[in-house]
Image (cartoon, rainbow, N blue to C red; front, side, top):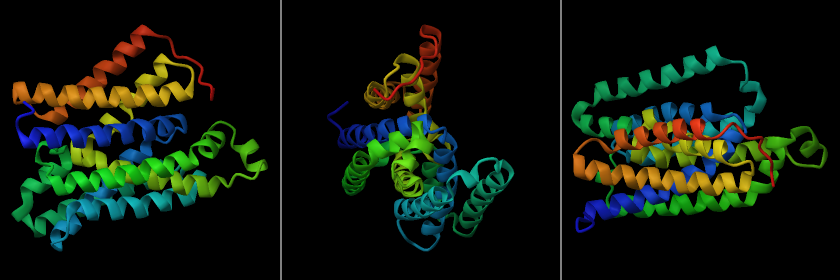
Length: 267
């Protein structure tokens, strides 16, 4: 299996994305903002297809649009809560715009399918280096804001009283979420970002009461999910995204049956 270059690239790319998604997803689940990853992926689809329409890189379009949207969502903060109808309309409008762009430029229908459902087996060396650079920058930013972000997530009033800028922390975190979403889309597609961004951390939260262990376990689960999914896809010739999403669902159900929901602490 590893004698093929495309499989080596796929394992390397999925490792980068899984580590980033596992770490970011733990904070995302803790803050109750799982919708953000879903929303950013939908908006990013319009950016990627728009980039294809003008002859630019779909990854660049996806990243730029999700980053701008993430900054906007972080800036609005709690103002987004309770506005399900408005958010739903924006998401459906984004998907509609994406389909409209494809309608005008149908020559890249294969790229559209890859954007929707991912194509980790098509990652080349250039994309791999881009994913590595983007992943390292995102993890570095997450490490810098991790302590105030955790403080603001668990005790926002006390954190604000201690001088933590909730808006700044929220904007920086949403920038990291946007980058992680753009990377996940390369592996499982914009419609299945939940598989890596939410599945592993939600499973980890069922198995541990300490947030530090939750982050580590989430990364391990995401990595296992991606690598086992790739291996099963190679030997069965079934879509990689199917195996990754199926493993995520099985893992969560197994964890739910194994343990009762623990109380989370920041220890």
